[in-house]
Amino acid sequence: MAKYVIQGGQKLSGRVRISGAKNSALKLLTASLMGNDLSIIRGVPRIKDIFTMAQVLEVLGAQVEFTGHNDLLVNPTFLNNYVAPYELVSRMRASILVMGPLLAKLGIARVAMPGGCNIGSRQIELHLKGLSMMGASIEQGHGYIEARAKGRLKGTVIPLDFPSVGATENLLMAACLAEGETVIENAAREPEVGDLAHFLGKMGAQIEGIGTSTLLIQGVENLHGAEHRVIPDRIEAGTFMIAAATTGGNITLENVVSRFSELVIGKLRDMGVDVLEDGSRLHVSRNEPLEAVDISTLPYPGFPTDLQALMMVLLSLAEGVSIVTENVFDNRFIFVNELNRMGARIRVEGHHAMVYGGATLSGAPVKATDLRAGAALVVAGLVAEGETEVHDIEHIERGYENLDQKLRDLGADIEKVSGESQF
Ligand code: UD1
Image (cartoon, rainbow, N blue to C red):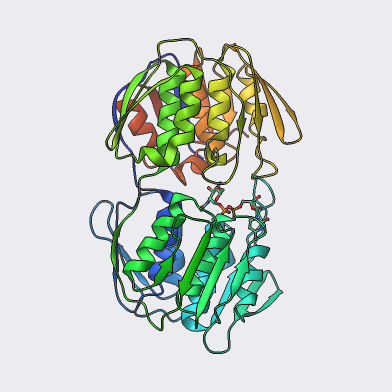
């Protein structure tokens, strides 16, 4: 297990280019399975989750190949298997997103049940309920979920109990090849769902209501391959904005869509961070002391749960007390113990956390409990006194492309060291 060793105290400065969105690219890959010929997806980040998804697609019979540094070619012509095995699904829950495409294209999908996840119970009943409303029969047993359709799936009205990102995406993809019209109500409005819908449109799908909570899909008989560039990763952008603010630095982010991060930018400004929007760039700097703000995570356009841990680091340095409420996942405060070991003062009560500001963070050995919590501990290490070791960085590498290199380019003192985890 590798670790990052960070010497705190450097202010970040310079430019950083934001990669393509992980949470979009993963779904574009699974959607490309539904085409009758090749798709080219540009701006795909070279991260572990993408390599895992490429393996899932290959197991299913598709050919996947990086043609340029960040361009992926998917050839689904030889799709001949409908089983996503446990070994891969257990590594990455997003593998469940092959279910809609396989069922719609082959009439059958067998996907290992995703195991527990360390950020809370992540259910998939909304995916399954929607697919069965479209006429699929679902059976669960021996650790697998098998969905079958007699002929094409049937379009229908699917009201989601909660605007789940994954359920919206699985049902959207399935609906593209279903017979007739499907309406997904209370759909997730995340920009990554919109990006998927735009890609599907290029493949020949007919989708209305993109970006709204009602998606209307007229099913078609066939989809073809398409070429598409992944939208910029708003969570990576948020990570660098928060890192700059935490260290009192001054950086320019390139390749961003600032409207995807409006609420995050607003909260940072409320805290005293300067954020200047400049086309596809954002200039972020901080010279003033930070002020406390309250944050409540919600589905988009609300504050993203994926930036909650990172914001807690920044709030730990602010003047006053902040209340952070986590509304999306039920166990997303487990990293708080690690942050408190570095000197933060955060008290968790159910799904609320009281962050007592004014902390002086000190370097310590800590463990990345999940992807975003891991990134938060790295950012804490940048501002902590002395040396921080962040262990179990495999979690971080699942979702960030060259995080350590990008931080080094901005002046951070961070090294990746391979070796045994002490945890
Ligand atoms: C996606 C993102 C993840 C982000 C999350 C919320 C990917 C690969 N991951 O995850 O980074 O944090 O959106 O923005 O895109 N739920 C149910 N039943 C279901 C489905 C979901 O109860 O059938 C619950 C989950 O347990 C969770 C909440 O809904 O508490 C949100 O889940 P969802 O929006 O589905 O997130 P993911 O698609 O898993």
